[in-house]
Length: 238
Ligand SMILES: *[C@@H]1O[C@H](CO)[C@@H](O)[C@H](O)[C@H]1NC(C)=O
Ligand SMILES: *[C@@H]1O[C@H](CO)[C@@H](O)[C@H](O)[C@H]1NC(C)=O
Ligand SMILES: *[C@@H]1O[C@H](CO)[C@@H](O)[C@H](O)[C@H]1NC(C)=O
Ligand SMILES: *[C@@H]1O[C@H](CO)[C@@H](O)[C@H](O)[C@H]1NC(C)=O
Ligand SMILES: *[C@@H]1O[C@H](CO)[C@@H](O)[C@H](O)[C@H]1NC(C)=O
Ligand SMILES: *[C@@H]1O[C@H](CO)[C@@H](O)[C@H](O)[C@H]1NC(C)=O
Image (cartoon, rainbow, N blue to C red; front, side, top):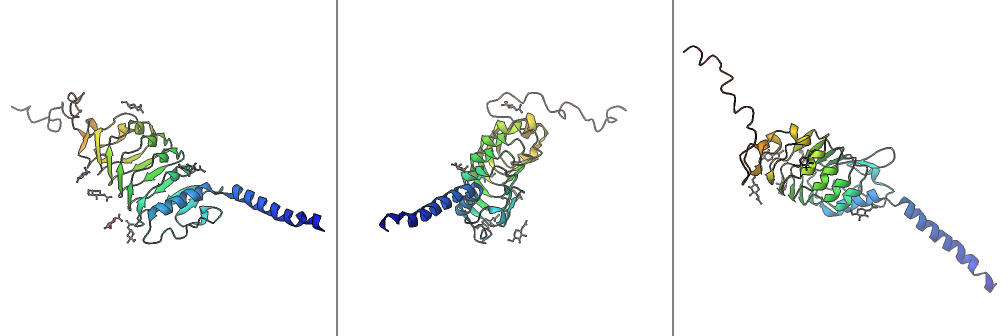
């Protein structure tokens, strides 16, 4: 009799081992990343109430959209009265295409880890309280088409790396506190002063303002040398 005690213990041991391994298999890093975001945000309207980290994945949470393989592809939290900060774990949402956080009161810096979101199409952080620099890592977002960071308090220079996002269609950096030279090459060749207005310390031909300590703007803009093209008959009759 005494020798058989282990027959009772063995099943318990196997059950413990099994439940441990199942937990590892179903561990959801995307749910963890979004839950970390929830904990860093202040949510007076309870828009994140359905974000339950004990579920197998975040695909049933409100304001979260997944693809057929249960990868998170959208986070839609624009105009949701959120404050607090973003978290570096957002860089773990490796299938994310749309990050919509506009018109809130989110503060702190833009995490450089967002540069890891290789599938990102749209990054909308406009009308918040973000401070600090625009991370140069955002230049790695090869699929980005919409980058709207306007109406924050961002400082520092515009990273030259952003010029290499060749598919960028919409850029809005207006109404921040950015300074220094506005790039003109790459994807920036198509953007007009509207993208940069309301940053009193930007300079260069894009914003028609000479940079301090630089020689005068190289080739004059085409509208300066042409004298009165709109009124050709004026000087002819006299
Ligand atoms: C923002 O949300 C409020 C309700 O919280 C709504 O009244 C308002 O119309 C929304 N604004 C926009 C631009 O969607
Ligand atoms: C999630 O992101 C954090 C911070 O960037 C990192 O330390 C962690 O390894 C990531 N986890 C996974 C599962 O990718
Ligand atoms: C940010 O907070 C201020 C003060 O609490 C509020 O008046 C304003 O409407 C908020 N902005 C947004 C975009 O929610
Ligand atoms: C951004 O700020 C400017 C200047 O304060 C303001 O005129 C404009 O309406 C703001 N844009 C948005 C989308 O709130
Ligand atoms: C940022 O710029 C705004 C106007 O564009 C100005 O009112 C504000 O004082 C500036 N803030 C800092 C910290 O320079
Ligand atoms: C634009 O010019 C800067 C240097 O002035 C360079 O670092 C960057 O790679 C250029 N971008 C493209 C797309 O060629």
